[in-house]
Length: 288
Image 1 (cartoon, rainbow, N blue to C red):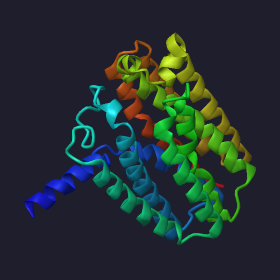
Image 2 (cartoon, rainbow, N blue to C red):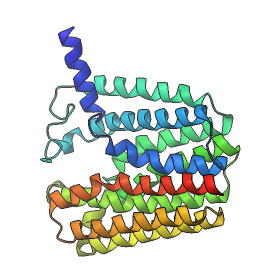
Image 3 (tube, helix red, strand yellow):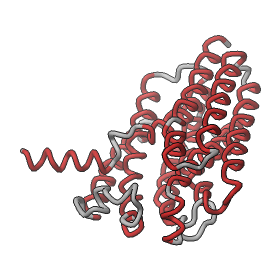
């Protein structure tokens, strides 16, 4: 039993269970889209499917990422102790854990409709490819933005039965948010990544990294504000956007010195920005 408990703890470490900020970054825009698509509370079934599915797929993604990046992560101070990198979990075991989680998530998607199921397959393929993009894309964070935003069209497909242009607009907006916070994340490891020859947005943007982050925040909030106004979400959503903008301004005070610890702090607090928008959407739909 003690051996099984030890493996269980390693698996929890593998999927970053003690660091919920990662799945919260995916959850809030997905739930916001779900509320928009349903015109209010989407029902407990869809809420459960998308909440659990988001957590499961983010966890599965961590296992794929760690296996793909094992040779890189062992040379990065922040990631050298991860279970796969340190050898405490084999690549096969990690992929098995990820495969089980992905299958459970797929089982949940089967409770929706054919369009959502088809989009979930596309989302999985996009997510699997992401770890390899940093070998050849100058800004792999932009590709990650697509992967992390695919819950938005899936939410519209499940709640509304189709994917309107509004959903794709929200996806593009959310892509800029991912670019903003994952560039902050990349700024933490810039020195290690330069030595390894890895491509990241923080390296590509160079001394324009802070400006790129703030510009991405601005585009994200502008696009989502435009969508919320089209849906007549009113002052609650505008207040949510203003709150998120204030948080983005605070992040500028953290990242402008480019100190790794402060950049990591900005990244870790981004889920509150997404939560502010989600609250604005829920309140706006309720008062509409």
